[in-house]
Length: 251
Image (cartoon, rainbow, N blue to C red; front, top):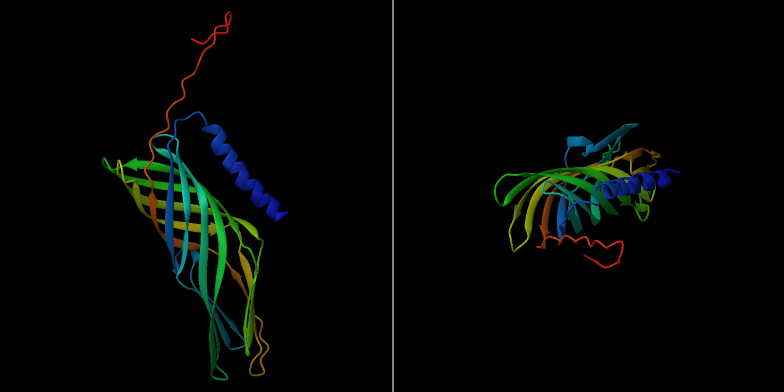
């Protein structure tokens, strides 16, 4: 039921945007992007801590990255619609610190998923070549599998909530546009899922212990965005052809 709701939200937004803007002139460009994922305590994207019977558990996001392709369809001089597909790899550090036994163990794991974002951009022209934009929209996030790691003293199960989920996305950036060499873009993005993306169950069973803390992986993250769009000429307007009612000939 939840997957169906996510799909309905995503495709309804795409349909509304396209159906309401079909009559506007557009320029379609194709681009590539890479987005380093920056660990931060801002926007609930930082470390999670839990103390259970004097055993301290920590799950800390590490540097990650996203890369993919972008398709931008210009609607007016100030509005564009963007979509594409991205590959994401996010790293986490798991730390278990048992103070009673003076025991510490660290492990790391990577969470991989794919994203199909749809966003509406609004431009502000700063100079002949420089533009600033802000955008917002939704993303369909695809998580292909659960994750399992272990050692002699613990095991770590990461169980994704659904293999298809939806998120809110927001972006701000600056763009340098050339007439022949394309567009160069630098910005930042914020990605916020509607619900936790996964449940992490850590079972610490070493040294005679039996502790099983549970973490909700929120999935929020911030990125620095580097994009390049290839140059494309504006699409030509189609001239309407009128037919004579009497003769059926075109005018």
